Length: 461
Ligand SMILES: *Cc1c(COP(=O)(O)O)cnc(C)c1O
Image (cartoon, rainbow, N blue to C red; front, side, top):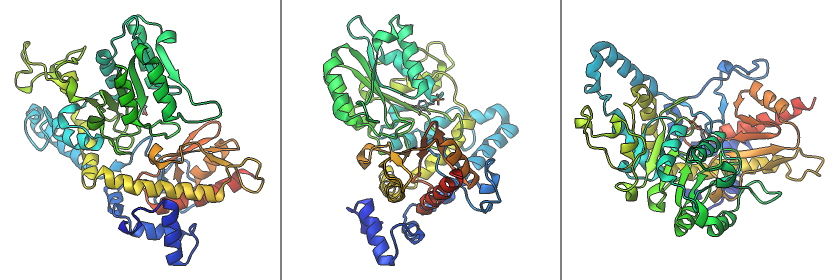
């Protein structure tokens, strides 16, 4: 969409609707944007569920043969079509040659994960040697904290956001206990200002500046899972380093969503899962990053054979690999590598820059339509009240918008699900709506807004 470069989403919508002679809210605008979307062919690389196959859908209300409106890639990405083929190939190989599969075929199991680490590294802005694919996200967070969290009597705190993802909270709390410290004293939890939903960068930087001498590790998410806020990782990293802290990020909601430059920003360590924006399927193999500056100094606390040199792995005195590769413990699950490979190859057909460019317009379009139909002002009686919790500044968010309704959400959620929308609900009143630029269309967003209107009307009866 080169003709729109430099325009805000609002300006783009005005320009397109003027040229089509329709309202910016018309479905024609969505069709036009889809037709001119340079990434639209990538949707074909994924399996989009049909409405009829979704358990909550009510076929008296909606045409079941249509694609569902899948807006929950922040929770579980769609299945890449090639996943099944790659899995079949490995099952076939296992059936036909058994143990020889470790070294033969398209994906020798003994080093299959290594062959896709470069694709993964591209997505998070890292060098290949800085990335490992292993375990699950929470496991990787633990392994990294075992090496980066070295509390002392004076420097023992971990700074994190309030209402961090529960697993991160548990991991950090238990790591603090493991070292004999008290989470009450050592967990420094930062909340937004009263009346605000998201953290201000200046407030994060101020806490680091003020408390930095007692902070061992600054550990934020890249994109906050609930609010959708994208943190300024470069500024947080710099501020942490100025005070002598290690800085790590949980990129579960950032990897494959926004442009990351973990290497250039000098981030010390990071971890992420692959089943959200990276579409590897539930429980998919996770990622870990250790900056190359630490490759000879930061050592894994726990060792396994897979962190050792492939050629001498079977020997008791093999060489521990430097950097993040040395953190690997067990031989990697080939059946999890297959779907991740299928997805990463789709990312490789484009770039995070192009994905982000589409994302800014796609999510901007959703924002425009929400603001058009719904009021922020609870005192306005004519329109339902919907507040966007996610920052309105596109630099401070990824593709997700978290919508807070003035009414309890459960009934509305049920009504939109009956009509073929798949999204995420957090009681009492929040919907997380996530148009994923890799496979969602502008028409998906338009259909969602239409469906939301019908659901609100149905729920109020
Ligand atoms: C999704 C998510 C998790 C899930 O952890 P698993 O170990 O993959 O189950 C943890 N932390 C964050 C921030 C997440 O978004």
